[in-house]
Image (cartoon, rainbow, N blue to C red; front, side, top):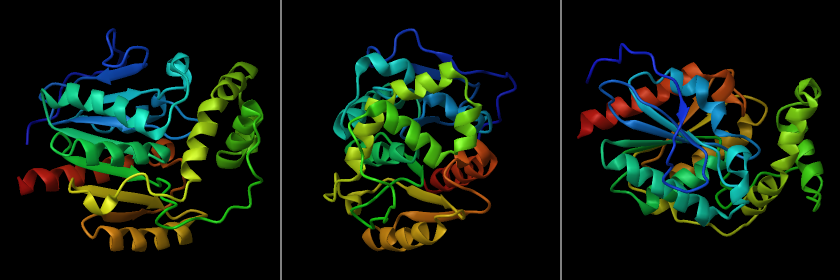
Length: 270
């Protein structure tokens, strides 16, 4: 293994992203072991991975706002295949210079799984956290049906997934920013409500870890982990203590430790 970089580095936006109009930021370190590309979930943005990538000090890092979200909002919302296309372009760019690790949070994990299946020769590791896999095990929800009011659904989703207190603490500018991401949110939610599998995880050959927290939905995720391993026994499942769905924000140390451990295992097996 190479030594960690001694030069602090920060994320900065690429001037010429591989996908025109996609807001992509990178952090480069000396003697990088690999590049971790992080893919965010619904109603989120690439910047939410800042704490995680700071803890992966031996890895280059790439984060981005998916189509329809924040800095990439002008590209408009897209379906899963288009999101996988975008990630594949980022993977191809990095694979020319070094190994590639994918980290997906929530809906982002659908994209990383899809890309790893498509670009298996260019991806060395996938780590996902609490990604929805309803075709493997559907989770019953008491949430009312979605409406066509994207702004309302964005606020409702934020209050439900984060908290009403957190929404109330946002400035009006921050609230409006979330509301403007509503159309992309609706596209994501429509995807995860489909019962048909978008891809076959049994065919995944890239080393993969599916992590989840021990929070309020732990019973569901434990059951999902069991079913996921039945589909593909090579996928490792990991439960994180004292973690909820916002683990990439509040449990960055634990997630970074999983990425480092799994990367060491991948390197040792080569």
